[in-house]
Length: 303
Length: 283
Image 1 (tube, each protein chain N blue to C red):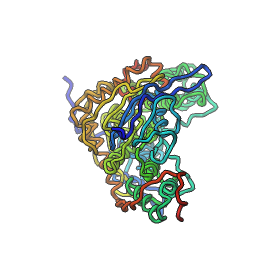
Image 2 (image 1 turned 135 degrees about the vertical axis):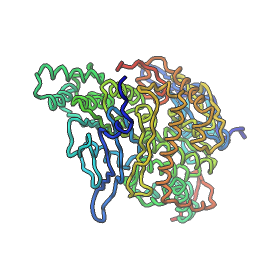
Image 3 (image 1 turned 120 degrees about the vertical axis):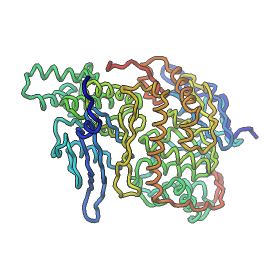
């Protein structure tokens, strides 16, 4: 029998960790705190979803995890070491696809393959490029340019480019936010399959509770500040104890899923309400006037 | 005097096309009681927005009729407030000036102070009491749609028409606006007809959900009564023992309207895919 590691031991070595991280933009009178006291440990192979309202620092969080920006306070650790810069071990996919418009699908992906495997034989790189294009289901569109693709297909190319680096960690910043519901559902399914098959550690940032519950092991609400101008924090975590990959139709019948969906929705809406409650203005009374239909011999507007 | 506040009877719409007449809507019947909220769900392109446009008076009916508060509809009018997916605010006018535009047309007999009070009342009701003087570009997309709702209600309409009002918003903002709208309409008692393809949205807001068959010749195929008092508390709705059953009923109705996966793929449809079992190309 193989000895089982105590739980603390596995927890003690997270792949990616934020410790008491704070980040602000601007300075002096224009100083705007965005994140504060953010602590989050992500284990190897884990799929974590961060759910938050728009404009509450989700992208700032992704940039910190990617090493694209540095925290003002606290630490970002990669395998226990302070993270200093972006690296090919972290693949990032943003909501905007940022493809090179003059290159075909294959060429866009090849660029990423060459960047990390430049020393390999050309034939080998070509094979790898085609493999990845096939992985995201775009083989039939290899020779198309971005302008000839739908939003969903462009987002597949962006995902392929991130996967081409064979990163250990995928950082996804609302990657499906700009897509219609059907395309989103298809890509969610493929994302789930790819993450499992390739054993990726994934941090998905989203505003969609159902998306978070469908894909992740753990949902982390990003709490907006109680008033405008206050930084967002992380205080709670909702484990999703349903085996992955999950079937969307079956989930609807899953008691655990329903319970979590209700809890998370209430939790997030309460946070949103708290943010709005900062400025309650009671509606002034309505004057006793009956509306009239214009164009029927009415008096001129009194100014 | 009709028994209903809004009566849509044998409504039809035929479009002329180069390939001959196209019957989009046929024999569409639906009636709303005073204060009732009815959601109209169906596939993209099934004609549900066409029906809403005919009730708004923006598109003439080819057959049948619509009676609102005892009067037949034969054109647009301020007795019907309309909220579209995009609020289309005038960018050079402040939030309150955008609302005042319509208020001036409908309350020309009031004083400027009274009209301003009307606009302020409705903007505060949608949670924008502190944003009266902001320009549209200075507020979020969700806040702009709040202005759109305030602008419609400020006309004191007999009927509120909502055409996928939250379709462009992110999912959390959408939930927030649904909560706001539910509380607001329960207070004002405004009769409302909403087009949506979001099954959860329909079940949270509506007294009844009318399901449209797919076009051509679209009509009401079935109606689901949502037996929960309004305004509803979201937790209570989600925990209601019938909730997921009703959700299934709506989704399976929509599924049966859609013949082929290709046709599904063609129409970007929210309700369908929630239960879709389309083959997984990744497997």
